[in-house]
Image: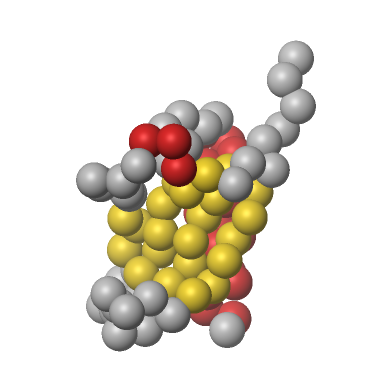
Length: 79
């Protein structure tokens, strides 16, 4: 059985966005980003495109992903 992958959520101010974003990482590799540019009631989940494949995590377990998105959302809306 594999050990669970480590989750890191980073709240950041990205110049491509007007509001803060939550970046989700698995074992140090980028998974997705949550943007609140459309408001806190219309959060958007964005996946990497045109990124260095070695810096992106292309596959995670569904339960891990759902938990990661929920934790990222909570941290983003708290800050």
